[in-house]
Length: 243
Image (cartoon, rainbow, N blue to C red; front, top):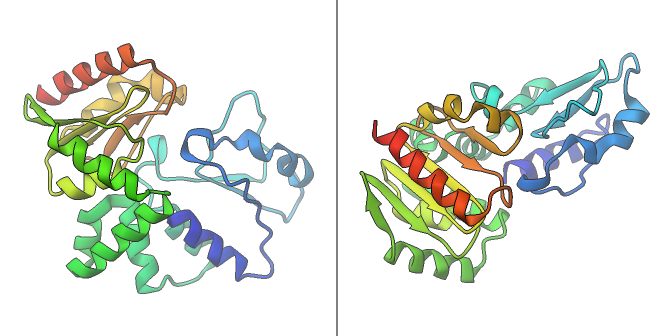
């Protein structure tokens, strides 16, 4: 939803040229925009901004390239939507502020901003729709929750769908939540800040990622690890969180 809102803003400004390869979280690589970097790179008075794109050392960055992100090493930044607004010197509407807060810090961030329960519910529903969550995903979320277990204080949910937001929204408020499928895993909640340092090499390799502040989220990229390794990581994360 944040990316869609950023696109709407860029479309409304004549002097901005933007490119959208319609990438998803698992394939959001800067290399997809290699032709753009070649065409506009190192040109004076031209600035290139890449939004939440994974950079590769094999792809040299032009001197006029700037990263917009709030994940991993950039997790202390404000949301990408807020960064874009600052660069363009525009003021976000109340709705856009809620979208930014939701992306940066989920429901707690919207509550801190002063959003009403109805506004939060609407933003969460729109966010799930933007992610492509279907009615089947919603039904699978209910089924997964019914079969969830608690391991050392962590709610553990094995999901048949790779759409985790319906599970998170139904279980909120939670303190510690771990959701996994046969090829990806995500942890949400307290103790998350202990994980990035332990898995630093995996994060730097693009196999894992994190964001959302100290009680945010930490997870694996989709399809990187087989089920056996996902189970091992699940147990390791629970152990680290429990300490």
